[in-house]
Image (cartoon, rainbow, N blue to C red; front, side, top):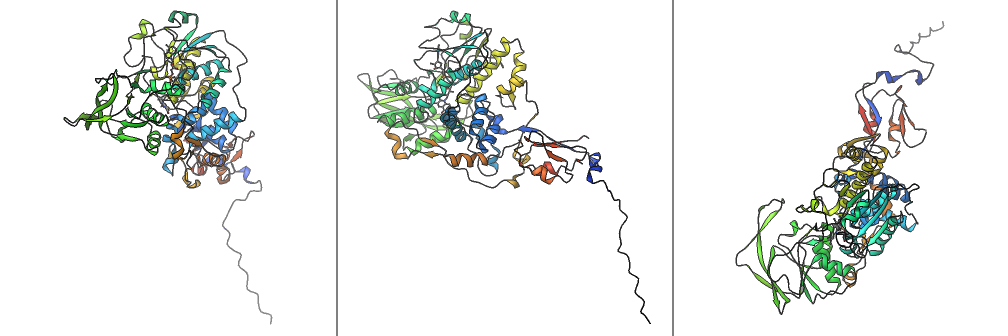
Length: 581
Ligand code: FAD
């Protein structure tokens, strides 16, 4: 008998819906509660740049080796990238999110690399096609005046630059020594600005060679005369032969004039002028001794300059102040100092030096360079503007008490740095353009703001605002650091220390092309889509596709169910979430 076959049980299958139409028929977008959107956000470096550069966009381009594109981005806002790449205090790096991960990106050195590369590749500014009938006078050719001249000339205004000294550049030429900013680099950047058709009057001191009344023929005036009056030491013997102010000494040294310093020179002060004066004196063959009333920690000079001054083995005497210049036959023989203790914190937020009675000591020196600060000289201004104390008063648009007269740079109350001066020159250009075109000036400036720190973008002004960019600044916590590799910041190349005192050759030699690219690629590109494809690859609904222009991605909301994996996986926080369908 045949054996009966056991009846096979059918495998258990749960009830399910089957579609023969493919996933497209299932519009998962109807489930959505959270809506992700691509919205570039503000990078902290942009917000922190007083010159208002689109640092972030320039870094993206530099990371793609498009250095000329990066130069275009930078020079839209700042005509002096080669200068800034050498002397700017780079607050952008202080705000860089990368420092919470390993070390800040080398933005400043990259700016220099981009500027030098573009210049060597023949990149120059293009003069405007159309000229406007209005004319603007600018008093002073430092970074504030140059920046204002650049932006106004680019917009087609007739610009005349009045400069008291024989050559243009202000402190950039006559203050900052060539070992930090070679004169050739400065001249090449100035020539590029002048090529836009800026008229120049050098040796023309307003108030002396040019009367204030003569400026009435201009439609607007920008006062950018800086702060050139040295603060006196107010000690006996100050009028002796061999005592000079830091800026006077630097002006002579930077113009190639001989300065008799003798052997030993006391440099009084702890700011940039003092460091530059001491290091220049060293290069001129003297033995400088820096006397500062507080400690090294309180020195107002830029940290990198203090470090370089230390590398050059310059001698410091801290916690000491001069009380008398010792003279013989009207000439400096020495300086008498008193020792200080640091007291409580004063009005400027730093601990006050307090002299210790009976602690006087004498140092034999042949010259004294006094570099304890500079103030503006208002004597050339009309009566209405002369009543200023310390700084020329301006309103939030940079306007003075006189109609169509604006002011910026070191003559107004703002941090005294090159990038702030450049930013204020741009602010004046925007305010002047808005005034002359009959626009609301405050509104015009508001449309140009990058974030909350006062940084202004002329590109935003020309566009009428930050269209399509979220105003919020990207924080480190908004990024997804899992996608970044820890990479050490590479240092700039420098001239060997033993070669430095022998002349005024540049000390910082910048980045090599390989290091520049490495640093550009270290940039997190905070808040900006740089086409890394993560969102596209992670989207479970295939709702993300490349935009037709290939410049970014787009979301098909018929299918996006709002899981926000794209937001999680975006390394740079370039996708925002809203609670709406
Ligand atoms: P300035 O650069 O001072 O230019 C003003 C110009 O106006 C001058 O050329 C002057 O001759 C001209 N002028 C004055 N009166 C008249 C008049 N009546 N008629 C016509 N022209 C006139 N900042 C940094 O960021 N990095 C640095 O490394 C740095 N180093 C410095 C080193 C020194 C020694 C000094 C003094 C300052 C330094 N600073 C530095 C500060 C920075 O240089 C200034 O903040 C900046 O130059 C200010 O720019 P400005 O255009 O307002 O004025």
